[in-house]
Image 1 (tube, rainbow, N blue to C red):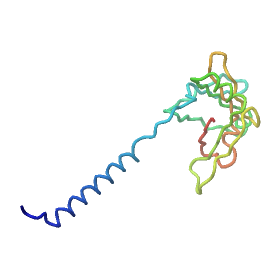
Image 2 (cartoon, helix red, strand yellow):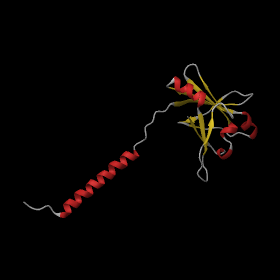
Image 3 (cartoon, rainbow, N blue to C red):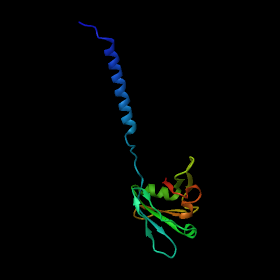
Length: 154
């Protein structure tokens, strides 16, 4: 019987190491799975004295047309959400919050956490089991959010 050469054991160890790293990379790069509690359905821009305008959406991104200073103070965005759990919709309408964060910032920033049903943010539950989030444009695009905003409803 011939002895196993040293290079063969080194090669086996290297192959095992590469296989382990490959499996770890595939596990880390797999998309995260999460249950989405609030699914956006429709969004519209509502201004006093004008008809509500449906906002075009690409996935979860909405495009809001450019507004002047007067429209920023008076107009609002209304987003309808479908909710799987009616109890969750009730809790969100009673004690939920919205996190807003500016996009395209020169430096990192933390989101502003704002409670619902105060300060230009309203969250109402529908009898059919949905929610409507209403945000004034001034609240949505105020501060460091002038060039766009990321919104989280929790």
